[in-house]
Structures are given as C-alpha cells and as structure tokens.
Length: 507
Image (cartoon, rainbow, N blue to C red; front, side):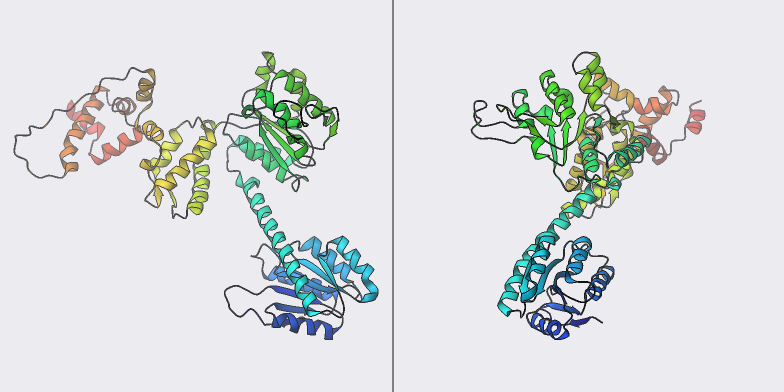
C-alpha cells in the first residue's frame, strides 16, 4: 500500500509539489520521504515498480480535471525485483509526459543509470543519497518539469484552437470540408484550397497539420502576395551571403524551416511564372538550391496551398502554369464565402462572442435580435475575418450584457435600416429627394408632452400614407420609408395599424 507524507509548505497559498519515491528497500524509501516531507514536499512512497505505476495511474484518474499528472517528480531505484526502474521510466515517459524521473542507483549499477538517461530520465543519483545533491537534482528536475508542463499547456491550447469542433459551421459544404480534413490529414498529400480572402483557409491548413503525424514539427505559413517578387525566391528557398545586394549573411528559407513539418503557401495565384516553375520542381523532387548557391538542399515537407482566385480560370487565360496546377490539384477544398452560408453567422458570432468576452473580461452573453438580423443581412465582403472583427468591436463598445444594434459598425446598421430598393438607390448615386415635415410654430404656447407621444400620431399618419400609396404592399412601403420590413411590422403593431381595417376605412 502507498504511504503518503502529509507535510507541505508552510502556507496554503498553493499546493505542495508531489513526489513519488520508489524503492524496494522500505527503510530507504521511508527515509527519503521523511527528508523530502520536511522540506515541504508532498511525498508518496511505493516499494516496487508495479505499485508505482498503479499510483501514477490512479492519481491521474483521481484528478481527471487536471491536464497533467499530479506527480511532478518520480524518484526511483533502478534495480528492483519484478519490473525494474527502467520499466517504470518507460511507462512514465509514455503515459505521463509532464512527470520527470530521477533514478537512484548503487555504485555497481551506474551503467543502468546511464541507460536511463538515454531513455529520458533527467538525472541520476548514487546511493547513499547526499542531502545537498538530492536538493540540487530536484531543483534541476523541477525546472525541466515546469518547461514540460508549459509545453503541454501550449500544445493543449493549440489542439483546442485547431480542433475541428472549433471550426464553427453547420453548412453542408463546411461539413464536407471537415470530412476532407479528417481524410487527408494523416497523409502527405498536397492540398489545394480555394476561397475568398477571410474564409478561414489558414485555420483549415493548421487543422490539417495538427491532425497529422507531423503535428509536433514546424508549421510554416507564407502569403506569397505579401512578398515582393524579387524577394519571394529568397524567402522560400533562402540565400547565401553575397547572393545579391543586402545579402550580408546566409539565410535559411521557409521550406527548410518547415523540414519534417508543413508549409502553407497562401495566395499562390500571385506567384510569377518563373516562381511557379521553381515550385513545380520542389513539389516533384523535394529539393532546391538557395539563391546564389550551387548546393542542393533536400527537405521532407508537406505542402498546402491556397488561392483566392479560381486557378482553373487563370490556367485558361495563361496566367498560371497548367503543369503546376495539375501537380497541386490532388485534393481540393473549396471554402464558400460567408454570404453563401448565412445560417452559420449566428454560430460564428456566438463563438467569437464567447472568445472575446473571456479575453476582455466582460460579461456579454448574447445578441439582441435586431443585431443578429443586421449581421444576417450584411454581405460581409471580408468574410469570417470581418465578422470576427465586428464581434470583437461590439464586445469592446457595448455597455450591456447583450450586443445591441448600435454596438455594430455603421455599415451594418445602415444596411439594417435600409430596405433593398433604398440600398440600390443609394448605391446608384441617385438618392431620392427626402421629404420634410412641417415645423411647429415656435411662437405657439407649448403644452408639456412626452416626445414619444408627440411623434406617435405623425409617424402613424406617415406610415398609413405610404401604405395607401403602395396599395398596402409592405415591402414597397418599407423600401420607400428606408426601413426594413421587420421594423415596419413592429411599428405597425406599436401604432395599431391594421391594413385590412384601415383599407376598409379608407374605402
């Protein structure tokens, strides 16, 4: 049975660091536990490797809400009956990557300790253990454990960010995209994505990488359209010192930086014919020469490309090499613009609302119906990127727990308040003359009355007149009044306008 030393640090500000001591000699195990417990560590002992493995497994199950193993350090003897300390080390390395292992060995078993270092142990100590050496070894081990835990945290954040369930959308085309990502991720196959700017091509590329066997290797991204043509070759393939004016030192390119990993080349349609030819060779042979060098460099890289223009049309016009197009057009993923997947706007908006509410520390829990309607009507030429910026701006500006219409950018509000015909008129540059209401005589005595009540009857008469002039057609009336049809219906209910009744009265 495990024995736990309850000694902890002098304050309860944070939990003590947990250490698992494993030795088949109970006297050694208990004395080490007593020593470490006196220094403020929380210590659990085990008298063989099997018991230690059970303890590690049980601790993880017990603290399932924690992302890492509760034990920061395992201090284990190398030579034990049954499973050895090396077996325990292998188990810890495979199943508990944030736990570090220090091996204990007698003078006659140093070779086993060296083997343990090769397999992943962070240090080894010879018995009998000297207190000062133990403390120094623990300090070094805990520094490494902190780095491992931080890397684990960063990896988890990446997994969460680029998990498929974090790519929001229920549109049928997006569901097919998720299936394609799952299918192509395990392979080395070249992937070509097409879609307008802002549709999420980078996110899909990262999702493919993080679901592939290369997930622990580099992911390198480059927008070909953002690099001047004269520098693009050097950026991709690197250069040697003196290759051109300003080349003061050797520089590795993006392909070499992505070795064993994934490179994502966005806006590949902007590459020149000469650059397209060089890319064709790299894709076929996985080799290239840096600018100014005759030395060939070989790389193992998975290539994902994207274009914001239809490459088939560019090929037909002679603006993109046909052989390169056929080389990269192995698996194609088409991302539709946001205006063609309007049903996904509320899902995406809620996703961004949750993210930025947390980041900005604000309690914003939803959208007013008018705000959602405005976003659904707006074409979002900047696609998902523009929607994300819209929600972020709204979270920053809102003083409510729900995003209101007035929290949205002016262009969304204008489109919400203007019907289709009014928008068309505005875009044509020939706006209709605006009617004006007669002014009140300022010399007449004023009787105090709430403004809403004062405006209620004039507004009712204006809407009734517009309805009659359009033969009671609601859409045409809304367009003439430069409001949307939903707003017109609300005002009709509020002002007690019944078209059938009022039409009969108008006779």
